[in-house]
Length: 253
Ligand code: SF4
Image (cartoon, rainbow, N blue to C red; front, side):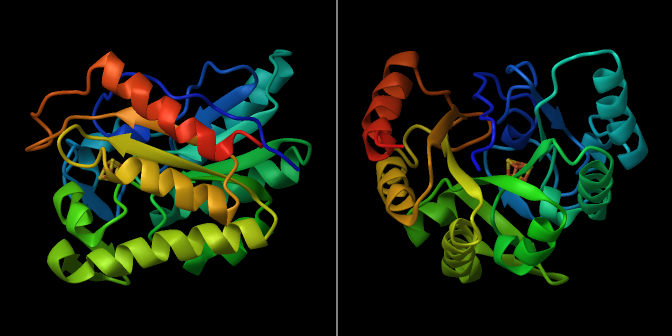
């Protein structure tokens, strides 16, 4: 079954993961219940793994479920709920609490997550068991050398790794996660964070491979480039051209 698609926004507040999905898209509600992250992206302003500056942007599991309940009781149209940001959903236990409760209370809702993919293959079984039917995976590097520029560190099973050591591991996990999610029957999309001067060559390669793997669409989000974080954002023309180029890999979906 296809999940409702949330659309990209053009602004990056603190972490791109906080803005990948539009909470105002028709019927799609984004729940930011995940302050911690297990990756450090060079274009993201949060600090590694603690996510303290993102706590204030997060909802508690209770508040998140209550938000959904009150909207439904007010008669608002809520057809899909995506657990998305402000950090990494699969690195936060709160994500699974919320998904389980929503799946139990509102089984008609289409549940989704937006993930950086590092833990997707490890947590997929649990994700599916908790009723998730759509997954958006953010992949911003195709080549390990690009990954070393886009990301600086990952946290995996309690250990920190620099991307010098873990670039191939991260990319392998992201693609395996995508392949397994498609095989599990989930509606899979890919998000690419476009940093000019860093990964414009990688984004079309990601789109092509994701299309071959069975992803349904790609959303491209602009972010600072070159030296990252304080670098220039992509201009509208470059962003539009890249989106147009990548669209062709998903046209039949
Ligand atoms: Fe920020 Fe990257 Fe973590 Fe998203 S995955 S919250 S962009 S560090």
